[in-house]
Image 1 (tube, rainbow, N blue to C red):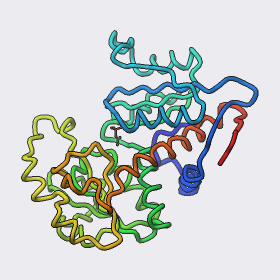
Image 2: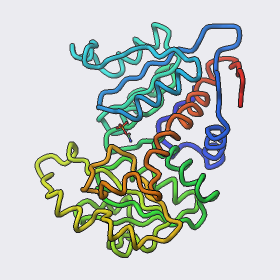
Image 3: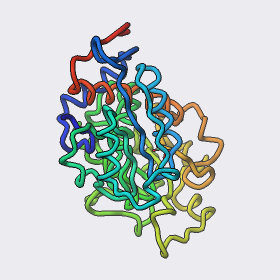
Image 4: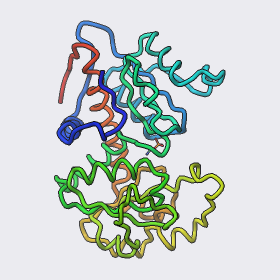
Amino acid sequence: MVQFTTLNEISNETIMQLLKRAERGIDMLSMSGSKRFTVANLFYEPSTRTKSSFEMAQKELNIHSLHFDVTSSSVQKGESLYDTVKTLEAIGCDALVIRHPLKAFYKELQDVNIPIINGGDGAGDHPTQSLLDLLTIYQEFKTFKDIHVVISGDIRHSRVARTNAAILRRLGANVSFSGPDEWMDYDITYSNVVPVDQAVKAADVMMLLRIQTERHGQNGFIDQENYHHLYGLTIEREQQMKDHSIIMHPAPVNRNVEIASELVECSRSRIFKQMTNGVKVRKAVLEHVLKTKGEVKYENIV
Ligand code: CP
């Protein structure tokens, strides 16, 4: 049973294969001589990009998406994540996409007999976001080796920062960080923290992060205008970037906080390309986990 819960357990070779598969494209996926696959998307936290792009990927692969709405389900009666997953396994789902606020929620699901794809676990990991980020960088530079990626902003509360820092280092990129001291996390940054005015000049990729106010608790107040001035990608800072450098952001974007609104769609920005790549990599991940469910038939591979 293939689970796709963290990139830590996936080899560099498999990651590169998934990226190549995503780039090459997959048209249809079905079990040979049998039923269409059915996948349910369980989002215990809000999502636009991850949920919609998984649904789009499933539609393009001829996979049936079983409607599951946490707010109108028996989760509201107190049903546990484990019992919800066992129920969907029992009624015939072939895989589940789960986003959940609990870090490493998937550890309580180790004994289930259904592939789980992690759509984001609290401040833990976001492996499919990382894959789409990797694809976007690879399309640009054709390598990860010695590419300088600066991850900027709310590092401590960001699953994107945690997952991307680990995998980019593993693939040979130089990773450094910028942002407020109170949001740095030595377990992610080590000592590679630089002031943003230095970072913008050095980066091949400026990867900005959303301020995760929902994870800040009582200590979360920030003055957004002040943040933009002190740490954000202002128009003046963008002008200091190298000619070939690109801007990324997992979104949703707080315009004029992490990034000046005018820069969201500027020529350096790959923010919407990241979203397009999200459908591509999620198709590749669905194929990767469903391969173990039986003999998979490919149709019209492009
Ligand atoms: N980047 C990302 O995960 O966006 P959503 O929260 O909208 O899915």
